[in-house]
Length: 584
Image (cartoon, rainbow, N blue to C red; front, side):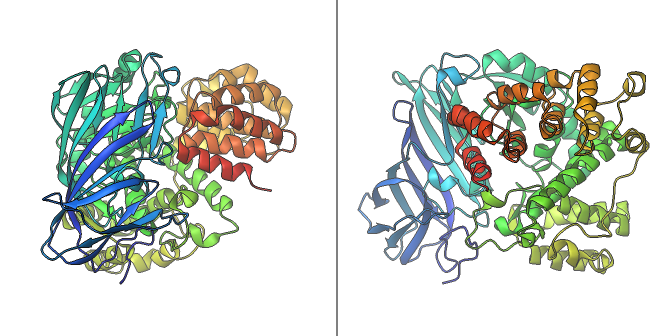
């Protein structure tokens, strides 16, 4: 009974799910969803059906006529959760599971009114990547099985529910409302997504709007007002947009990622609201996922680079078209820096820095890093340089068309690439990217005039005149390139001249705080402590907690800060920080 995904109980000899019909009542008092899901299978089959669950209270399993079906919920395994095995009679294609979620469901975060911008209403949101959908719905939680779904969410009438799906209608039969949604395109389960709270919307263009708490709506609409132009550029590069709408939801501060590419409703961290549109490359990244990830999907977490490496490549092509090759090169240099940091982080486990990973017995959240993003990007850049842009663009379009609404493995990709670009993988030493650790010696490096100017000023205290036209990307690179032994007096001079400790750009601020904390520059500690209470984005939490924990003088402070703010963080983020603080 082969299991093709090491992170799912799904057995390839069993029938696959075709669609879901999900009904859930949101209970803010108990922090539970009281739910039932009807699974329709692609074909009738007798025998066992294994579903993935995590911390679900299974009440009943019945057939389409309401007749009970035999089931067994196995004891939980640390990574996979509990296998729910249902015995199917001959001819059955549809079954319903009645259950409720746990208050500690790993995909859900329940926020109190005080944790929201408005302070008046609670908030709930989901985050199902990589394998957390099973804590919300019992299902075959593997990206290789795509599903369509309908959903009906019952919630307090004063609140609004939004889903990564098409809105159907809202009913208000009593003190509660029911929001109906439908996703007609088949998606991998990790893209199931919804949020419930005090939400308002503003149109950005004919295919896009932004949702946010009312207090943040105007800021979000201003920051993301150019999204329709970005969408048109992406279509010119990668083909027609297959998801009808590209709406955005500005999340509460505790959202653990920069963005999540849920189709029709991308989730975005509020740390992007810098006031100057300097961080909208994250929007370009999530938009690019509409083709690479959402449309063409990795078959399991072992092939995650197929989602993220392609998407970083596509993101930078969008940025190049919108802002020019110089800005795209700055982002590539920042990416190279983050890749080097990730490689160093996994120095004790170098096999995890190959693109094609083997993750049996390993939680995908524990190995989440920039490696699949930036090393995958480098491989595609090398292939583009070898094949030439026109040939590579033709290849990329055909790749998307061939695997549209499908999932594939690295091995599938290699076979396709050898057919369409014969010999190119060998010429760029694709083996060293796919199956060997580290950064290949022949990997391409970004080059531009602005990068050369930055390198000349590396480690200095530049004059105001020299940097008057710098973008936030340049400032971030300048700070990340500061030598690790930069004297405290130099940092003080930099801060007095450029006011880094007061920066409102989160990327620049975190790059500064990491450098300043390393040198134990006192004003940085106070700002870091406050910032760690304001955000929940792991991209910021992890380097700051790591830097604090690596210092004997600040280690106890790191633990105290985490103890103070842990409840504000999403469960995925808490798990990651606990791992950092547990290191020797």
